[in-house]
Image (cartoon, rainbow, N blue to C red; front, side):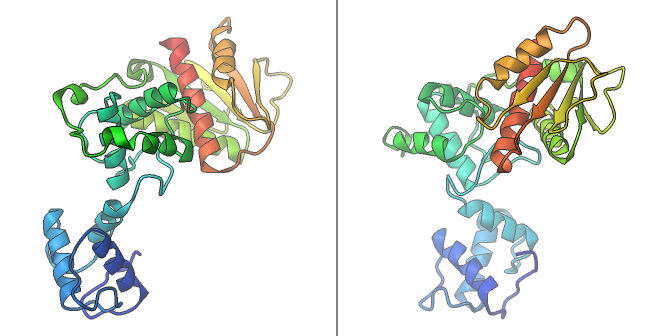
Length: 295
């Protein structure tokens, strides 16, 4: 919902607002969710705004609506991973609290999925047999919820839990220039995700995503896409097959570390990647391999 909803309005948009307020425990009066923005609904909006330090005007504009949506996300409603702007909301807050209590420290429970939270997720995944990609999808959510009897109702902000682990190799991202040479639209999407992931980890990271070959000043060049590089370009090729991305990190590190000059590798995506998760996973593998080689 992008439009501003004011007192007196009626219809589905008001019902959506009322359902979220009701879910959060605000009193809508005897009529409940009726699609009419009057009386108790306006009072509930003002109370929500007051509780969330928003302008208390009783109008559901973009800021109030965004805060309502954030407050009503539950863990598992959406895929969570490190990106910029960061994911934020009640689902992230629940995740952070659970990880802290379980011993995978991600720092203050602030509802923001930043670099420390991603690192804690990856450590949790390693310990529970989930793919350690820092992406919180159904498998990781199930693993967290299986342990709810351990973390539910526990204090997630003890001094021990606040001690965070280091994030991805930020020093590498600050000191090395990465170039992603995309060969097609899919390669461009992967490159843009890699650049976004690097920025979310370290705001000073230098990643260029370009349709041209790698610039001379780049410290590492990744050629990415489903197309094959011209035979005149002699670089190692790592193929992403339809069988998935198992073992891709080790193969990328081997290809990059084995270079005699500047690390340069082609990542040939043999089959189209399906959806947000697979694209993000490959971006994670690529950036982690670069950090491993230079770290």
